Image 1 (cartoon, rainbow, N blue to C red):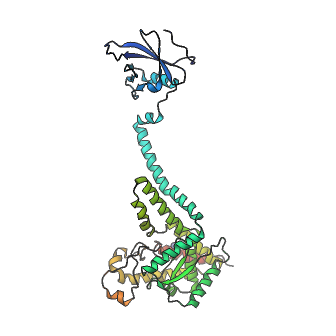
Image 2: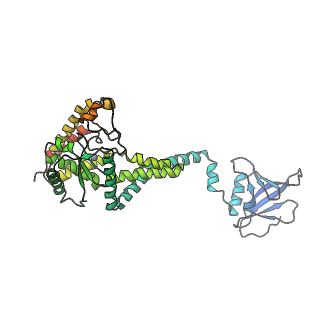
Image 3: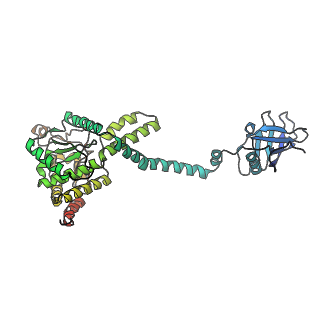
Length: 398
Ligand SMILES: [Zn+2]
């Protein structure tokens, strides 16, 4: 049998049987040979003078199963059967047609399972590392003017819903504290300028950093502090959050996750929900530890006693114990944890306010913007008291 010349020195061939479309019962012997690497094969059928030259993409070959005979349908309706599937693959491969890798993978349930597991791992890795990484990168690019505007919007919202009232601290006292805060970080490297606001939220002793980097002190914490050093410590902790852009990173992480979810599920109500998610931001334990590190660093650099911050923590812990009576219903499950309110718990109005007190029952005002609070987002208050107590012991003597 003479084949047309090919450019392949050792042409790959495989035997086949041909069932003619005319319906002849008798199969004809045939041989399929790779015709170069240009995507063509020769099919020499017994009794035919000239080999058929057929593009491989016109061959409708059945999927390859390990031991099954492969069927190939030709355009004219003739059908070829090949017993040696592996050799057929070599022929087709030599002709330039490779089994699509995807098709081959589909033949293996192991590959299917592996790709499923890999997809899940990729999604989790994306969630855990890629999105936070992207958010952290983005956070560095947000212009300071935007950050400031954002904080003004948040403060405006908190005021509108009566969560924040004007501070009762005198202007002199506020200036005195601002000066103490500014001087504490004056020598700090890469010191960003931060706006410090004073507000009153009932008797709540708290302070928090907003996503844009402003720091809010509530009258409650100023009055509870044993001395101003402790307040500088609180400021230094919040300053740590600002320095590392924790608020903006949290906010962008949430926004990115929501945007990706919206894109993936094609459901843009998810994106709308981002607004709600953003209100439930909590700092991670890592962020808190980082902020505590900054607090200790700044206090030591100014020879301030971190014991005063430990004492403030003790007072806050005890203060929340006292307040438990006011929040029996809402906070019963938190009994014994020595910490409340949590940022995702409703923000209450002034509990000492007679008009509110008159309205009996667990009537609490739910804030659309729950604040990342100084105390309650820190789960290990006892451990932290120990740390601030110990930090001064180990502080290097000047
Ligand atoms: Zn914090």
